[in-house]
Image 1 (cartoon, one colour):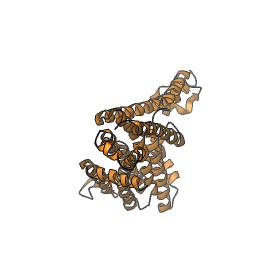
Image 2 (cartoon, one colour):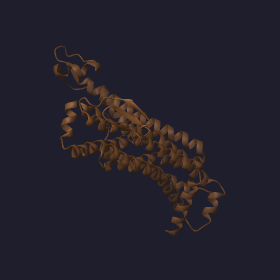
Image 3 (cartoon, rainbow, N blue to C red):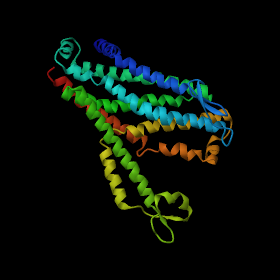
Image 4 (cartoon, rainbow, N blue to C red):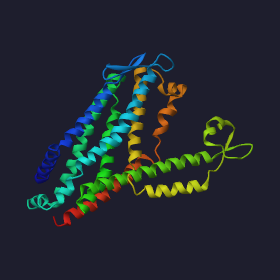
Amino acid sequence: MKPFLTLLLESYRGLKSETIFWVTVGLSLLVAVLFLSIGFDENEISFFFGATNIEFDFSGRGGRLVQEIGYIMIFTNLIAGGWLTFIAIILALISCASIFPDAMKEGSAGMLMTKAPSRLQVFLAKLTGSLFFVFIQVGLFVVIVFVAFRWRLGVWNFSVFWYVPAVLLVFLNLYSFMVLLGVLTRSVMTSIMLTMLLWGISAGVDWAITYHESAYQLSQYVDAPTGEIVPEEEVEFRMPEMEKVEGDPQILSQIGTLKIVHSFFPKNSPIMASAEKKLVLDGMAGMLASDGGDVSQKLEDEGELDDAMGKLTANDSTFYSIGTSCIFAFVMLSIAGWLFCRKDL
């Protein structure tokens, strides 16, 4: 165990000595503080701790509730949806991309292999060090966001901490593939480019499933008198007079094919959506406790519940998404670890 811990410490020190480590951590803290700086009152939304503001009348329907929902949506749509889901993970992948290609180069890896630790210990230590780097980055970010929710909304929303394991799992899904490429090709650029390609294909298939599922649901509604399929833009307005029938079997077949293809890829979007859904639901519960009213009923009355939760519906269950993603990462890392231990370094 001691050789492993020594290697882990050396791996972490190596990452910490890189400029990109501090740039990444600094950017994460900056984005979190920017979110913390957003405030609101009855007449305006303020930014940068009141340095600038936008007039917005919150005195109408919903009042305080609209402010609280808006604050949560700013985080889920912009901060989590933009920063945590994409930019932070991309920066983390770039930061850790050179670890295994460098370890495979003759010299540095060879020196490590002449010492007591086995090659497997070296592999696991470098992998753990990379995950620890991401944990520090996301952990500091989430702590500041946690404080922001308490300050601005008056509730302790502990569900925000679900973003830590969610981001770690998404990173591990992509990084496991990057590690395999790094061991195979010993090229940092190739590893980054092909990993981004994998991410793009996975996201594209997930979007295609969502699109086809929406099309299938629309194909289930027809005009009762004529039996004709109602155009998408008219479904919502003509719902009471429409008849629900069996959907287009061709679209259903395409959905099945896409889901089979998607089963071989990591499910990054559903994993992040599950953390987002948990945050929103617990945020509503917190507002219910602080306001002393039935928030769910208020949201239904205001028509906000559908807007808040509609985008959080994932194509697959959370268990399926996490399970298949873990299997993907395990297979990639198993192959990479086997090659790392067998290759001549």
